[in-house]
Length: 183
Image 1 (cartoon, one colour):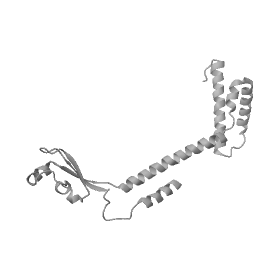
Image 2 (tube, one colour):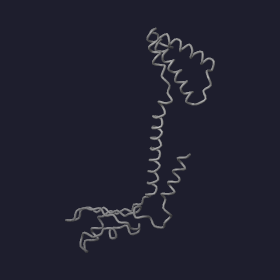
Image 3 (cartoon, one colour):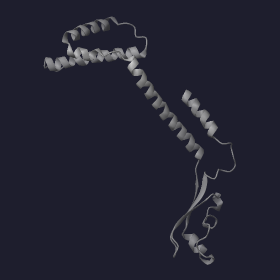
Image 4 (spheres, helix red, strand yellow):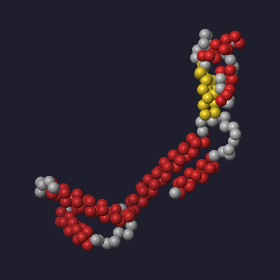
């Protein structure tokens, strides 16, 4: 929601006041003229209105003498092009805002994650089989009683992660120690 408000404010700041004429960057007439006799091909751009988008108004200076102008202009292909630089700017601001927010979120997680994580008991359980059995029985008892109430989402996720780790350890023991597949 905050991001949407930010984008709206930035968009309002970037939008110019309504004008009858487009800015010179938003409109143009582009004429592509191929080689003609001893003259090489060339591309001409002019900021003219759509009705004036033709060879006579765009090609300046005219590379051919007066009597060849009509023949030269018949070879040229002129197109009127219009774009909205304001829309392009708004899209770029939105894109950069999203990328920036994701980078900030990643940095936040990288800084906070070591502070939140507790020492991982899982690696200790791999080395000591007796402690593993005790932890599994305690976890089963806690899970059957409902365990302590998880107040935050993070505590619930950590609880689910610990249950998953215990299940994986049990599967490893079943497969590698007993050489049986779980069904």
